[in-house]
Image (tube, rainbow, N blue to C red):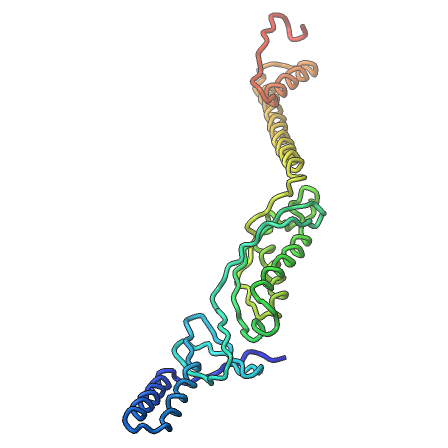
Length: 284
């Protein structure tokens, strides 16, 4: 398989000077000597003109002679090449691909919406020009395929897969590295270098978003209640121990049960407790 090769062109300034000399010689020769041979000088100058090429920074020119690849000019400046060369300009600048969110299934099968930002550039001008039809379109299509492959390797979160250490929502660098690897393998055929790839949009699909939101809210409520009960039990235990140590009051099992019940209601209630004054004994 052919690879990119460098081409060293001639200086364009030297050749433009030569073309000007040919044109001036031909014009003055025809005007003064009136000999038709000077027409050849003018025709030669016209023939040389298509060979001039300007290569801007971070730009390259692929040279082709009658269907044969001759090389790539990556040096910046004003040059001259064979006028029969076909010249294709290929940008070497970094480009951004901000993909629209697409619907895919995660590892568990939940439909999610995911979009990525890809920073890429052309590394091998031969592959980008001759191995694919349109390398920009190739990057867009293969990026979507890579997103689907990466999304299927991880769950959205670990609510349903508690053993998952890496998820799309919290994976961070690990998910980005997998995405970059997936994209690099797919885009290598086109001579594309993946500079950066990361997720910029992630959400549940609309048909399950409401249910998943309620599940997350329920999980948060359960976790909060767990902490409240855990703290209430610790406070009741501490209260009983201090009452016993300071010998403030002697409580039998029934009194302890009543006290624990009252404290748990006060501490675990989601609203402020309303006190009820007992004018009798604890057993009434």
